Length: 278
Length: 278
Figure 1 (cartoon, rainbow over the protein chains, first blue to last red):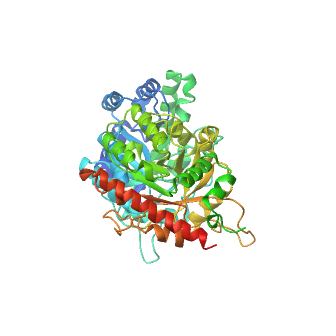
Figure 2: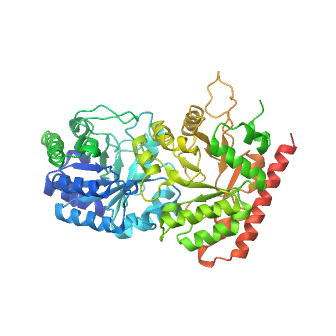
Figure 3: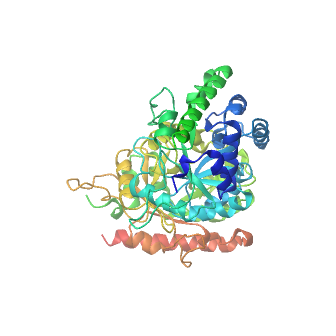
């Protein structure tokens, strides 16, 4: 079989074993958007304003719920209402990174109750397979999906080499709950032994560190264009943050809309070029 | 110079470059305790009851503030009052694991405002050095200390080999804010190149996965005794969770006190044996 990213999103939506992945792929097709906007602001009003502005252009909103200063449970209801209004899924970028027993509590409990509202969350593989077991015990019965952090876009990341290979193997051992990766490239052949060939699994690749202009920030973040990410590296979803909404101190909602539209077009054209070339 | 763990805690307290490490070592000496209790319960009442019970026996309380169901900012004030009453420090086991810009917000902001009350927190090194830069921008001006996760006690952990070596190097590059490691052994010679010798840095080693009886749980956690951890492996602080408070469903406060006393004695005797053998 050819690599899954050479098939259409519509085909992949019909065949994916994970419920959240199917929902995401269906949304991508309906909205002709492989754009996820990462909303990293600390005010609930800014958070909702940006999401309402970019909502029509995205398949997925990525949140860091734990940086919002004035969080209340009511904020989750407003986020869910926007998810309905604009037809997008929610991805809480929690980067779980503890042992199974602890992450199960962090995912289900506490103030945020992430599993109750986030269709998708993610985890580092550094604690070993117990992190997947712990999260799956909570998320699988709810139809949630997990992304593993196989690579990171920050300077000097240790998620390389054998670390990335082991992350790929952990995903292949858990294809029902693990729906894909946070990574910079396809993972089908990563971590295979010499006598193994790539299987039929369709792991989605969501790529952070995407920008049309800027090349990096002062804290070690690096950027690539949507075309590089989708067409050259074969990733499935582009994640864009400050490239869409700039500085939250000077929020210009019309400009945020314009940028979201621009990234959506860039991401979708790269996808069309990819599948039409087959 | 001999390895720092062969010196007394009192000597090390006078010479440590990190403010939170000095506070911790002074507390260890005053209380004759190298015991940290990890309080992994979801009810605020249980959380406070366990901390009040073990308070006299510990130098450090380890929290997962984000698993508490009925969290309010008032809970932090009560935790701080217990920290004063019983003379212990607070370590929020957040396991930060994102890029610099994001962890700075997660540490300073949001509902929990961890930097405002936790003397110590910890971070994975997988995102690369930007995670230390980001956290230090918030924590260093407040006199906080950071532990790096160099190893984990869970089955199949990827924090081994070159990953652990790189964590050790990152610590040595940031000795003012990085006060030590979460690990299972001394780190002085880990990750040195062939032409390097161990420096003068005194990185504290805090060891999780300590138990006097049980050998593991169903989710891949493994245990070692205080004597193995302090005497054989040269760690400085033992972290004990369910070994002290059992199941939160059947909380017996007198038994919790007894167990805390028992672990404190075991940890301290192992330390005395270690330094007296010099």
